[in-house]
Image 1 (cartoon, rainbow, N blue to C red):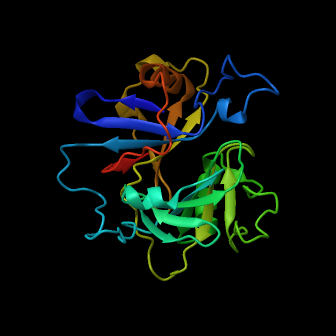
Image 2: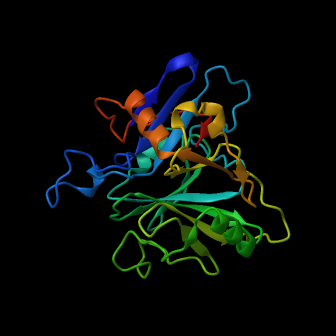
Length: 269
C-alpha cells in the first residue's frame, strides 16, 4: 500500500505485492512467497473531500443495491485465497451474487469478480464490454497487447463450480504472459452503445523509457491519458523510473490490512 495525503485529496494505492519492477532485495528463492516479488498490479483510489457530485452513490437503506454507473467495465477479476462477503456488505459494496464466486460492485462503483484461488498476482485482468471485440483487439494491439492464454486461478481451469470458463467469443490480451491483462467481451446488447463507467479514471500501463528520455522533466499532467479505447476507457502510459520515484515518496512503512478498506472514494485508476 502507498498513500499521498497532500493538498486535501487523498490518494491510496492498493495491491497484493510490490509494484517495483526490480526484484526486492529481501526476496529469496525458494523461501520467499511470490507475493513479495516485484511487478504487481495496483489499484489507485482517489478521495476528494471537496467533490460535490460523487461519481457513484450507494442506494438508501440498510443494504446497497445500486448498480455500477455504466457498463463499459464488466468486472475487475481477482483470484484470492479467501474473501469475506460480510465485509463487502459492511463497507457499502453491492453484492450481486455469490454462487461459487462473487460478483459485486465496490463502494466506489467498480464491478469486481472474486474467485477463491491462487495467482502470483491476484489482480488478474480487467474485463471490458466491447461494441465490437475485433475493433477493440486492434486498438490494444497497437499498444503492445497481444493474445495470451486465458488465465485461471484454480487448477481445474474453469471446469468446476468455483471458477467460470473463459466467456465465449471473448479475447484475452496482455503485454506478456505474466502481466495483468484485458479481457475483451462482446457487449450482450450489441445494438445499444456501451455506457462509460466514470469511476475508472484510466488504465495505467508502465513502460521502460527509451534511452535519452528525461523522466525528471515529466509532470503529473504529462501522465494524463493520451488514448481512449473503443469502450471509452482512458489509457495512460507511465515511465518505469517515474513509478519508482513515486513509490519511494508514498510507500507505507507498515502496510494496512486488506480487510480495512476505505469508503467514499471518487475515482479509480
